Amino acid sequence: MVLPGIAFALIGLFIVGAAALDWNYFMTHPKARPLTMLFGRNGTRVVYGLLGVAFIAMGIAAAIGLIGPPPVPGP
Image (cartoon, rainbow, N blue to C red; front, side):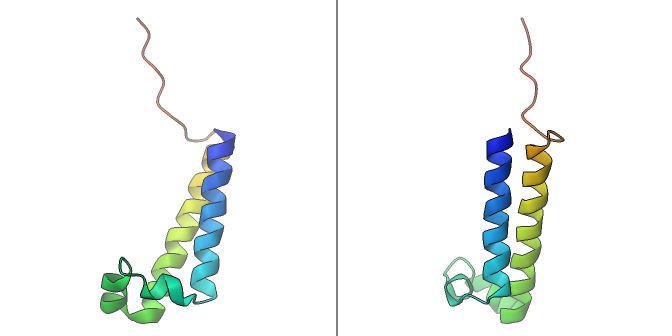
C-alpha cells in the first residue's frame, strides 16, 4: 500500500496548496459553489485545507502500513 499512500499524500498536498494559494479554479468550480455559498471564500479555503490535511494523514498512514485493505477471508 505504499504507492497508493504516496498518491493520497500528494493529492493532499495539491489540495492544501490550492487552498493556501487561493486558486480561483478551486473556489469557482461548480461543485465548490455550495461550500462557497455556505462558508464564504475564506471558509471554503479552510475546509479545503482540512480536507487536504486529512488526505495527507491517510496517505501517510497507508504508506507506513497503519491502514490498508481488509484481509481476504480464507476457505
